[in-house]
Image (tube, rainbow, N blue to C red; front, side):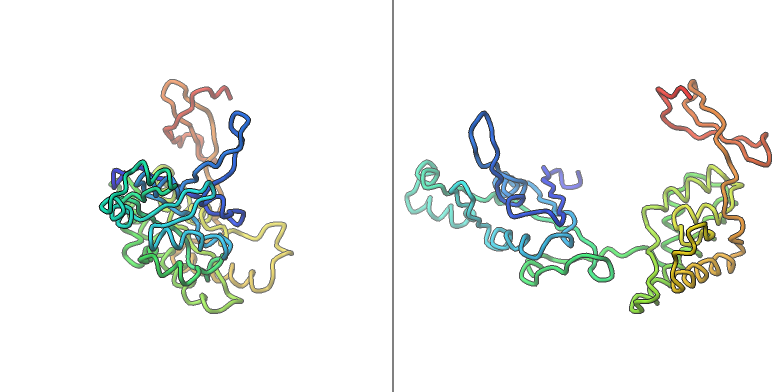
Length: 303
């Protein structure tokens, strides 16, 4: 949408093969033919190709694209050969015609063909490091998570309320997240103290819960996105000593901000659905008169 371009997306997985990046043989109307896959379609039509999850691919799969990325050339299974625009145009200047080149199975790579690869760093996350020749064909940009004051700013950006109490609560949440991420960074090189990453994608839900349920304990709100701070349940016996120590450290961070972990529980319960207003109605457990309406699409609900 930003570039106003057609996009082809390839979701890479450990099961991806060379056929997923070039051509796949399919049965159509009783005949077996080769069907162009997303990278080939993007190269021929000038689309933007997005490779999503490149760290998941086996090491012998993505190098299939090396020549296409560097020289805009690829030999296809159906006999065609994708040729760079410069070489194709040079043949035209030497007297060849598009028809004769087509008969020779030569096709032109579009000048607007571009590739964006998305992945997560390996390590610390699971996956396979990129093959050096493939990595050298990209310009890398690391998109880091928010740090320091950026965390609070991101939380406020997700909140529509101007209520000062809500904004102060989000400032407290931002402080907790900052310390959890600092703890993550300090333990990055200590295998025994690996700590889960606090997800950036949870900021919107945290801001929404804090805004719509102002009397909900912040400890509970944070625990929904970061269960490591939740109280140990009946499965605690399967945790290792290192896991229990990490949970204790995380819970101590909450207590430093005046958020007792004993308050991690849900204080609101679902009451009913208002079909006319298209809202969900929740009530505080210890005060049925304290009601909260949450807008949403409730069409078709009969309960």
